[in-house]
Image (cartoon, rainbow, N blue to C red):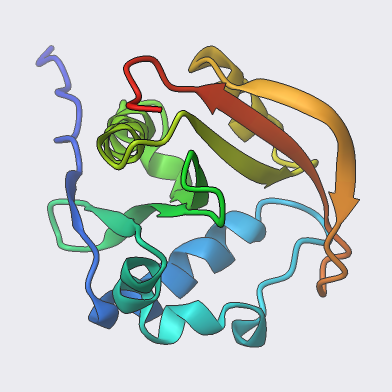
Length: 171
């Protein structure tokens, strides 16, 4: 019997504005895993020019590509109104890609970006239904904060807030 080898790890690269449609398909696929979680293009206008959108916020967006060039992951970070706090958004990974370390690699890029920009903490909001994501964040040192917020989107989403203090931040 020939041992099966693991598929190669996706390549992570800075996103371009041309990645918007692929990121939209990725998000729609992730949402489809959850009952009542709907993807509507109108709720994601930033995907028309995603790289430019996050650059204008003092941030960056990355995508993960499989060997065939398909976008299988996304991860963005940007500066908030408080320069000591950056926020992580657009954290999505296609189901077949999970468990291969890709999300941890993308998270490391986002945390380094925040540190390099002088952020003392990273925050994020995540749908209360995304229990796998909650475990991922908690494994990586994020603390769930009290309370939830209602989004009022097509999915009637409620979100938890998480925060991670950054060691070695300039502030």
